[in-house]
Length: 254
Ligand SMILES: Nc1nc2c(ncn2[C@@H]2O[C@H](COP(=O)(O)OP(=O)(O)O)[C@@H](O)[C@H]2O)c(=O)[nH]1
Ligand SMILES: [Mg+2]
View 1: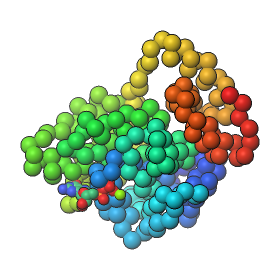
View 2: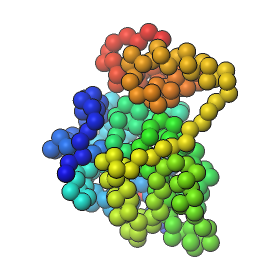
View 3: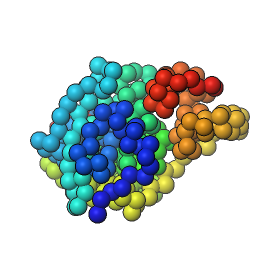
View 4: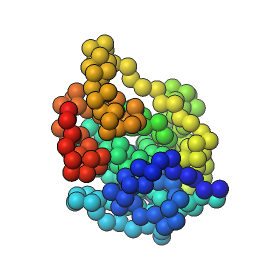
């Protein structure tokens, strides 16, 4: 079985980010996370020697991408820059945000530090607000054990509405479960239902005004909502990104 990508535009988007497909049928998986959560350790363990690094198109931010095969399917794994947020206050955050938003990965893994979940959940919640296909990987479980920290992965999964996999990537624990989970999400066999924030009435009202004006450019309602929230935040970089990734050099009338 091959994992089929859902729409023609996805291919185009992936091209903008220089995601090179060997057989055109690979699932594209983004790897996000705070710095030092073991993202690159997961990336290396999954892709081994099948990886290369370069820069993000037009940016001086390093980009690592690699391939792996699991069960009967091929995957392209994109190691995003480590970030605490997706609110684009740094170039790294902008790169991570743009790839998750406009690169349309089939799934996004957020690698987190089991000993520091409270801080790490900020990014998880932000990714959940931007896309359905999120998997939380709670890494450094060996460290957590050493510090007598217990993590209730199934409780977290229920609370967040997304799959949660525990791992100790440096010793290779949990990686098979992670790949199984990624496979199921990318193939549509497992559908995450991320719980989302409902804002105060005036914000929700403003969103209702903005979203229809975005629908011409952005079909996906979750993304349109997220972009509308950024516009309400006064984040001008999102307009540049829409121009760059959705309209070529065209004009956007907002
Ligand atoms: N104890 C422990 N250390 C880990 C684990 N995963 C990664 N590390 C270590 O944590 C440090 C940061 O890992 P790295 O993969 O570079 O993190 P990144 O910044 O998220 O890419 C390195 O020293 C890794 O060897 C783990 O599961 N357990
Ligand atoms: Mg890294």
